[in-house]
Amino acid sequence: MKKTLLKYFTVALITISTISMPLTVKAAQKSNISIRPNVAYSKYDITGDGKADKIRINFKSESYLNIEVNGKKSFSLNAQNIYLVNADLYTLNGNKHFLKLKCQDIDNDHIDYDKLLTYKSGKLVSAVNLMSHRKGAFNARHNSFTQKVGANYIQIRMQSMPGGVGSIQYTITYKLSGSSLKLSKTTYPVTYSKSYNPLLGGQNMWKCAKSLNIKNAPNGNIIYTTDAYEVCTVNKIKYSGGSAYIYIRAEDADISGWVRCPNSYTSRFFEESLFILLSLHSIMSSKSALTGNSNQTFSFEQMPRMTGNHQKLIELRISNNSDLDPNYLIFFHLIKTYISMVKAYLMFWVFQTICLNV
Image (cartoon, rainbow, N blue to C red):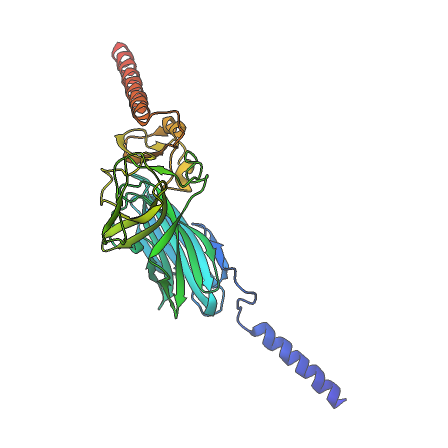
C-alpha cells in the first residue's frame, strides 16, 4: 500500500513540476518569420534565452516607430519621413536571432534604413548595416530581399543603382561568426530575372553606349577598350575604396576584366541603362504598388499611373531588340507630363471662374 501511495505521489509531483515550469520555445523556431507592424507576437524568441517573448512593432506613418520586447521599449526611430516598414525575424544556430528592419521614405520612396538588429542588454542594437557593404561607393537607390536563411548564414539579394550601370542585382551572404555576422565575400555575382527587369527579359546582354576601358584588376592595367555598341555581359560587382567595379566580358573579343563605375549617374555605360531625373508624377496613386520594391524598375507603361510632384529618379531599362528609341521615350513622357500640367491649370481656371461668378 505504501509503495502504491509513493508511486502516485511521485507521478503527481512530476506533473505539478512540469505544469509550473516557465513557458519555453519547445519546437525549433522557424528560421524566417515575418513580423508585421502593430501586431502582437508571443510565440517567438528574440532575446536568445530560449523563451517565447512578447514582440510588437508600434508604427504610424510619418509619426512614430518603436519596438517593444516583453512590454519594454527596446528600439525607436524617427518616423517623420517613413511610410512603410518591413520586418523579419531570423534564427540561426546557437539560438542567435536577428531582426531585419527596412524603412521606406515617403518623399522619394527610397530605402533609407535597412539593418539587421540583435537584442543586447534590453535593447535592439545594430548588428549589420545592409548598405555598408558598398564601402562608400555611389548608389542612387537601394533595396534588399532575403533569399535564404541557413543554419549559420543569411543570404540577401541586393538591388542597387551604381553609376554608369543603372539598376543591377546581386546576392551577398552574411555568415555567423561567434555572435556576429560577417560578409563571406566582397565580390558578388550579378543575377538576372524577368521579374526584376521585364524589359530586358532577364538577359545578361548589354550594348556599350561608349568605349569602356577594361582592366585586368579593379585598379590594374588596361587590357582592352570596347567600341561603342559592342555587346558585353556584366557578371560581377565589387566594392572597394569608395568605388564600385563591374566585371564585364566583351563578347566578340572574348576578353573579360574590370571597369570602374563613376560616383554619379551622369554617365551611362550601356544603351540599356537610361537614367532620367524629372519633376514628374512620381508615386503611384496606390502606394501599395510600390510597397514591395522601392528600387522597382518601372516599365514605360507604368509611368502614366504615377502621381505627385516629387523629384524622382526613374530608370527605364530598354531591351536590345526594343522598337522604341530612348529619345522618343523621353520626349513622349515629357509631352504627357506637360498635358497633365495643362489639365491641372484648366481645372483651376474653371474652378476660379465659377467662384468669381457665384
